[in-house]
Length: 348
Picture 1: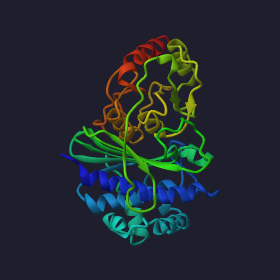
Picture 2: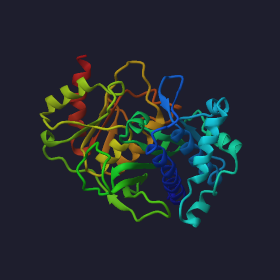
Picture 3: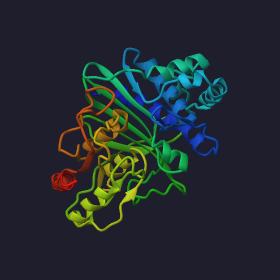
Picture 4: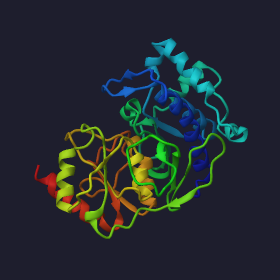
């Protein structure tokens, strides 16, 4: 199956959602709430989730959706809900045909709340299920750093389509990797379909821009590789990563950035290696934090496993219960990196 319609709708839906997130990003008041797990959520998260789910329900009404957010806190805070709905109404693609393919605007506040709550699938190994993170890297979003709007389609537990909207990464695939968000020429859409390779294109305001094929950089000398890692020490062990780099002979300073922008960066060869190393034995990664990026890197010529060498398993539910950590690298050096990861983590 080609998944042509699924890819086009996913790309347009993510592109439209970034119009809203960018508006919030440049606003000092981001309407931040705290969830039960103490992680932050902004009006950008809620608005982007509503827009994307509305587009998916219009085009694929029988598909399930695993979304990160739910709307109970907005029902308890009507003024915040109205603020978000005002942003949602304003967030339209400039191309009327593209906007029409997404179903047009959300009709009212109740419809917006219902769309947000429609991301309540438990996930699993049967049927068509979308995994959505409306603002991945919320802490980076709040501090003015990198973030991504992430969407993936899984069929019977296998990721078939992945899209990442990264408004603060350079459009130029050849630009050196950096966590910097300043300057012109920013905003890129990464995508992949299983078996069809990976692409990038500029994030714009209307119909989709032309795509270019991306591939991971061939690494002949592992000592010259560049690591990407999470900004937050609570997300990945910086100490273990430093020891792994030392054992591999890598002396270049790691680039720390938030979100699945790291997957996109290594997929196009701006960086080489991405490690997310366990900090708690009982922590379970969420599927929406990895599904799109995992596919994009693998379709760009990379290998993605957990810290034990197992493929990431998106068929269990809303989390990667059977996996610990993430190791993403070009296929030619992944085995060597994984060997050192196992050794370092095994000695802890």
